[in-house]
Length: 379
Image 1 (tube, rainbow, N blue to C red):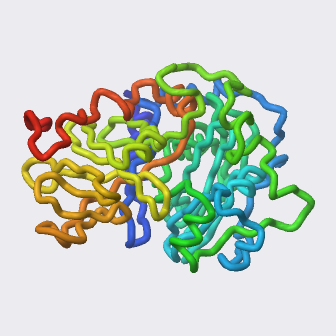
Image 2: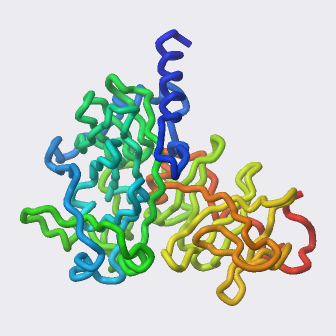
Image 3: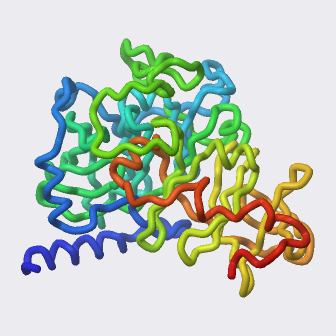
């Protein structure tokens, strides 16, 4: 390894330790390339599009409405994104994000980038403060493996939208810590966060009530058909190409969770290597959350019974929104929550073919989810 490569790896490690607001710890950046050679090679594999730099304008410190103001033009089932920023949650309507794809925020003198790629369904939000540099991002216009390429105005470096990592330019090797994000509906978001700020439609003639790529509210559009606008390197048929996935990286292992599968079951107990986890549907916000279910020496097992989340060991009742026990012997205990990103299956798998999946072999079989299981699945 050359001295330059060692230096870049050191920068990469240090970038993960950037200071974040006190309410959250740095989260690992999804699916980083495995080495500097892979990272540098991305620049030679970009796909040209008809979108020129600047044709899709990013937003910088845009205007916001209150929930009551925004409700005048929103339907309950309209998809929206929630980003947990230091001054509280903010709501970003998907139809506005489809037209701009990047929103640059400044909160308490720190920069944050909320990013969305409609073609891959990838929602990511990053701390872009870079220890005071405060990066501002635009769409560069080209794609890598179907995913948007971003460019920062500060240095001209190129970044992958899905990974939050610079692959070309002065900041090559630097990574941005993730922020918690949620993909839900306007009805759920406005009920859960009635005081949240809501991204307002910028002035102009764009049809912000219409998504130029299709619609998540009806079938037969780009978001659920088999059409690929640009080719991908890898393909996998375990799920439909555009299945919405919640994607995480833990201890160097990658995971994609079929969101609809968890919503159907209510709770899914599974293992990811040494990690005993549970994916649970939070009906209030209508999202899937992932928690560490190892509370004692052995992992707990959870089931949904009569609309309640209950552990089989103590029969305590747990809140799927916070991971806290609200009744029973475990009352007051709390499971650690892990946050991820959102992506269509085709996009996540193509960039991360080594990913684990749920449903998959790591899922705890139903036969163990009884009061008298045949054996301990943790052994």
